[in-house]
Amino acid sequence: MGTSKKQKKREWLRYRDFVLSPYGVIKIKSLSYNISVSVNVTVTNFAEEDLIERLQRILRTNELSIHDIEFECLETQKIVENSAALSTIKKLKDQGFMISLDDFGTGYSNLNYLKNMPAHVIKLDKSLIKDIRI
Image (cartoon, rainbow, N blue to C red; front, side):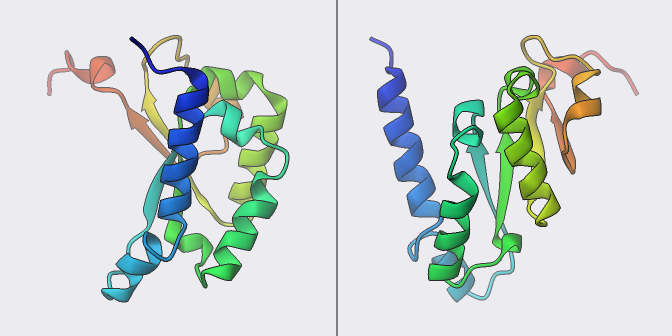
């Protein structure tokens, strides 16, 4: 039996809340590691109206910086087609957050999508490059 959308959203919220909590990034920072934590985010999450405000509040409350979090965009095609999600990603990038595209090349990925995606990093899916010979 598959996982419902509601269950997936609850799982993402628990994961996100852990990563952005004293038990996630702060635990890593307390060990004197200077690393960021990547969070996979879907188009639905990016389209949430108050995502940026909640994120800023969580960062302030936990004394974290924009350099402690990296967002990995899932579902590139859907993000490009969703103006609210795309707007949020652009705002996050403008604020200095690291944005990456995860598994680009799967599904209906198209190089034209890259023109509209405000990403710092593009992570290519293995299936896209597996037959390339060097």
